[in-house]
Image (cartoon, rainbow, N blue to C red; front, side):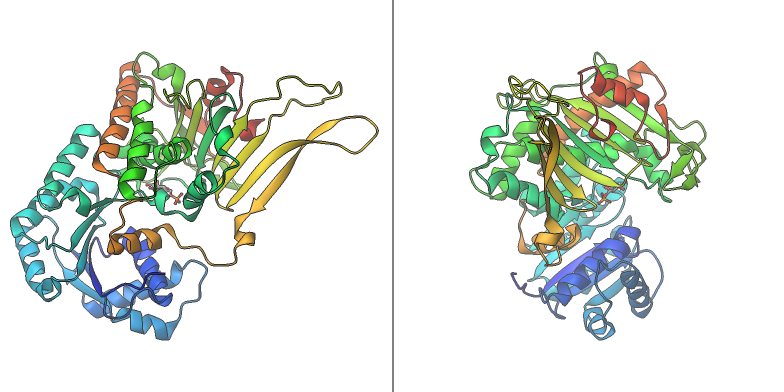
Length: 486
Ligand code: BG6
């Protein structure tokens, strides 16, 4: 573990949900681990007129509630709290940036992280004010949350505005999936083992399924979610990043730009989906009332804050294709949604079948499968065919299962712990570069345009199911089934 020199974080949106539930607990965890000490300064900025003491009391309460498998230690919290500070400011007022700049001037020589934990709709204004007030010091960096923009053009505008103050090397665009331990493990699995590489291609792999299922609904975020939808909330960023890590060529080293170059090549090779083929290659859905784990839940249309007649999608399934030598002809099925049957994220790789079955009693045609479960329980499972006991030569699939939590006793870092520390260290590997973002939007925008052109409402699905029947039909047309529907 690299112990960090004193640094400063200026946390806009300091009283918000992300700051309270994820960022402050993440910083507390790293403080507890000894990665930094009380000389660090975490200045939360928000519009509420509260005192530093009030802020600390609020943060303590939230931190207690959101610690990740660790006891809250009162004495250590008090030490950590000496790092915490609060400043009332309005992110849309230029004068407030000037006041902020004067307040923190004595730490200008340190690494300073501007963390904009605010809706990206504020980013152009914030970027402009930061440039005018001249707040950027040589050691400064800025962290931007997703979704950055609502399409390629709006994302470009944000990047332009932020780019007036910060160079590309100072901009950290967060996709918290990249900070997750299991996603790191996917890199380890692919590039730390020689075993998989010869199999990781067309001719060996038949298809890949990437599922990120959530049981949660919109959880009080209706305003944001209804304007965003699953395609922009999950696919444009998290799902495409998982796809990139799964599909990219081995990078020559682990430097930020080398890795990001390889991911970019995957995004560039994605076959376009537009008005001509959107109906065949995508399914969008919206949940209606249903039951999840025995509990009745309302449909999306009845969630508080959702406008009447909303046609926002809460589910998306996509057949993605990568037009390059490694992956030509191998479909990547992506699927994500709210109020699905399970809270679960996994990548399931189905290998080709044996060229010829020599066993007359082969009871089941079941190709080998490698399932990388990212959450909730991180595991890697390989199914192979084995002979079932008995006098007949009957084959049955069995699993070689590796439970990663069992294998390693150490507590894994949460995504935000890793990402925050990476920003302070200046490591950009796990952050999206501007051209990646731009290319991801270029693939997403025609899908949305295609949906608008088709003019259909999203297909409905019962909460607690795996999405609309059309999603089963989409993959079924290729002769396959979703893994949980086989
Ligand atoms: C966020 C989305 O980026 O990711 C949320 O905005 C979603 O809608 C969340 O619930 C899922 O993240 P995780 O880490 O819980 O899988």
